[in-house]
Every structure is written in C-alpha cells, then in structure tokens.
Image (cartoon, rainbow, N blue to C red; front, side):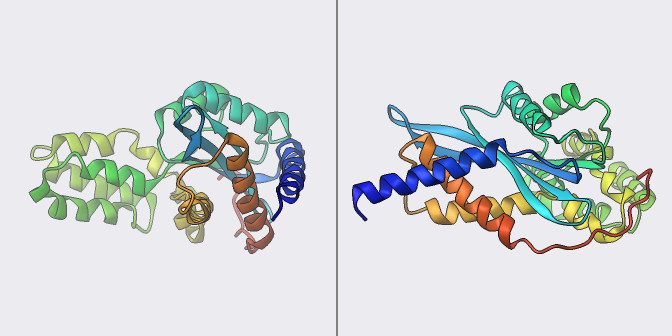
Length: 259
C-alpha cells in the first residue's frame, strides 16, 4: 500500500473509533465484565500501558464489548474515569444484576466509590485460585487445591459454604496463609449461585474479555510493540467491531426480580 492509502485508511478507522467511543449506551446491561490488557507502546522508548475494557450482556442475551481505554496505569482514578464515561454514555445500571472482576484492588476501590449500591461484585474464580496456589509450599499444592475446585463446583451456595468450612478446618493449621486468602472476600466468589445454574460458568469468569484479548495478542504478536497509542486503539477497535458483529445471541434464562 502507498503511504497515502495507509493514511486515508487510518483516518477512516479513527473516525469510526471516535464514533464508537462516544455512541450512547442502552441501559439494558444485566451483567458487566471488567478487565484489563497490557500493551506496549513506543513513546520515547517502549512504554508499558494498560487497556481497560468492559463487556456487557444485555437483557435479551446479546453480548457487546462496550468500551476500552488505553491508560498509563491500572489505578483507582483511571478505573473511575473509565466507569464514569460508561455512565455518562447511558449505562446507569438500572437493571444491572452483577459485575464480574478479576480482583484488582484499584478496580474494587473504584467500584465501591462509584457503585456503593451494587453488592454483587463477582470475583473471577480462576484468578482467586491462582493466588491461593502461590501461598502454598510446592509439596502442598496438589493435595490442598483439590478441595477449592470442588467448592466452586458445588450444586448450591449452601453446599459451597459447607465444603469451604470443611476445607478450612482441614488446612488452616498447615496452610494458614492460603486459607486466609481464600477466606477473605469469599462470599464475593459465591454471587453466581444467586442466578440460574446455566449462567454460573459465565459469571465466574471474564472469558468473553479473554477472547477479545486473545484476538489482540494473536494480531500483535509479530509486531511486539505498537508504534503509538493511536495504532493500539485502531487494533482494539478492529477486534471489537469483529466480535460485536459475530457474537451469537443466547437468550438469558428467566432471572428472578430479586436475584
């Protein structure tokens, strides 16, 4: 391609990206998933940046990558800015039932400040268990980690609590750090049990965002680093547009009003 063709194509993408970033959001999101992706951008050398991302599942079952923003760091103020932008565009959370996160402290603090009424902040189970593993001695890991997986595979919330208590009793003395870590905020790992069983696997993870991240990594692996922040945004927008156009609609099961 000639330099002029590349320039014109970039201009079209930038215009589309700006329209995407400012378009109104319908306040129909029932489940909101928040996560971040590390990016390398060339700015007076290679600089590590963070792409904050949000995916929503609407009441009719459609999925949508709602927004993304490249920032210098994943701190509370930047997460607050990102969340306030979603709100200003129309995502008020009137029908929002649950927010799924990976447990980043800055994000959790931002949610507590901006969404104090939202009590269901579901922790990502895989991320939680990975942090439990690192608090165990190597010889303990296989024996100790079998039970936590069964806790979150329980057929009900009450059974999950029972299994946790049994595991805690068994391992508290030998692996106190791991037990205390899983015990902390453990009820934020159980919110998915408040919804129909067919939704549990979806709500315990941020797999939809991970799919978008995999697509970005697959396309950027040969590049290693973005030439600037604008190129990073164009790539993420291309993936976003593709996913939003191809995600299949799966109608949600009936959710109780008080769920």
